[in-house]
Length: 236
Image (tube, rainbow, N blue to C red; front, side, top):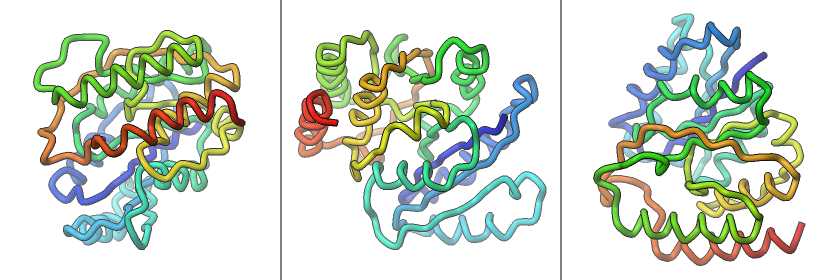
């Protein structure tokens, strides 16, 4: 089997190297998985692209696993995820943000239920254990979005907006995503549920950045997220 690790990047010059080195250091030998790392830069202008260019030219055997794709402007999280799915060649995909809020070292925990055949979709929940330092609005918004997901789709999850989503290629082929922004998160959950797949949650470590330093969901993003949940419940 082959794992595709999709890393959305936008202005992450301070963390991108550490993220990649930690991803490369994750030991997947117990799963006998090959690995490719697909980085999609979504129009960075802070020096991130120069760092990625340097990495792409590195002939070290580990860095040969990395493929870098550049968007010419900033489209948003949804467009990045769609690009990653388009270029992946693996049997399983995992989405890994580049801001170090989520630990790459948790990847084996997320992969285990799929490898064991328990499910074809895993979400890494940030809120199945106590977390310190979470922005109040982020916490409340996620609870609201998650409530409506559970209510509309008859599921019992705790973190619909988590970045850590893992799924088989079979699932991805059926989703036909169309979101460009943060509404890709509810679209993923909605279409996974409507396709009949069970979402298996695994608790993950969460180190929230301050609101001013991260690309957090804003109040203006709330309406598209809620609209997506309702829209995809009743429209294919």
